[in-house]
Length: 147
Image 1 (cartoon, rainbow, N blue to C red):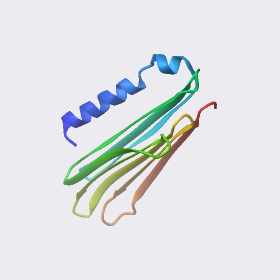
Image 2 (image 1 turned 120 degrees about the horizontal axis):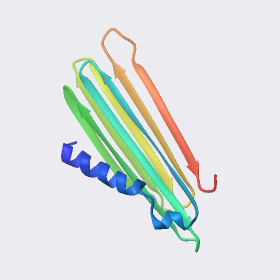
Image 3 (image 1 turned 90 degrees about the horizontal axis):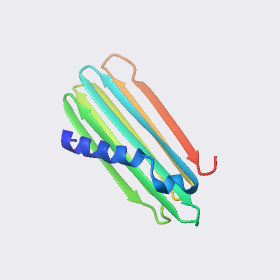
């Protein structure tokens, strides 16, 4: 991901996390997200995913989701996408990986927003150097409207 794309993704994320009138007058809301970074031997990979949903005083619902990632060192790959589900929810996924020979770092974040109901996110990271065991980590968060 280019620096310009990363900056615009994080700018959208910053706007999304700003307090707004819709959330201030809601019956209930849920927000959540996870992020992770992995780095070893000159390679690094990071991903983030965050989402929110709310139900207004009149019963209307609204949701948002942002996700992204980046990788550096050696050969790199990063991609992210957000898609709508058939029932008003959102799914997002970001993947990033960098490898230099047998040394690699990777991160993956999956985020789900169920419109007016809940937000869940999981990030998995892993690093590996030849001759060593892989180092893995998982972070998970779940939030429901009304909790």
